[in-house]
Amino acid sequence: MFQVFKGVAAALVAVGVTVSALPRSADAHTPRDAVAVVSALYAAHAALLSGEGMPLYLTPQLAGRFFDPSVMSRLAQAEIEFDFLYDAQDFDIANLRVVPDPDVPVTDGTFHVVVTFTNFGEPQRLLYVLRADNPLGELAVTDIVGPNWTLDGILPE
Image (tube, rainbow, N blue to C red; front, side, top):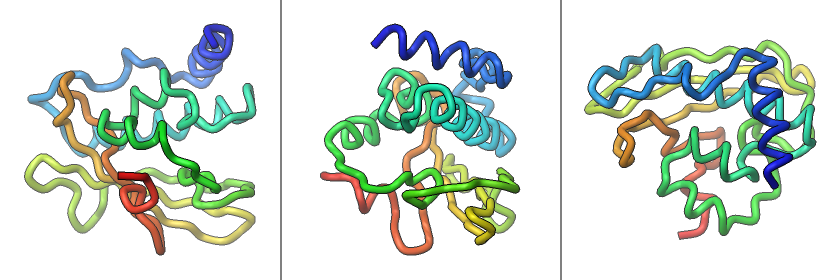
């Protein structure tokens, strides 16, 4: 397991993603910080898929950096049959864009980030919900809203 994590860390450094580069202060979060977290999530996910061939959310040591502890405990029990970061079982991702939600970037400490991309040429859009309610006060993903599903809805209670 350590070798897998070590390989992931090397891959992340290669794409310019380090955990220390992500925001850590609970009192100064901005929409830009939320975008940085989701952007780093996608970079880490892509690096892990290309290096180890497994999705980031199946690597608890790394997924825990991006997902809220309440999500992590449910994710550990889940049997998910598609890659929810790409909303697909098979993927050929292009034109990935991560931006604050143009309608409601933040409300009451909840940040909304929109991820758009094409998968095999078809446009996709996911909405990420992030909060800093966890013990470390770091922004973390609490939900993802797809076209006909939510992460909260597909994870076991």
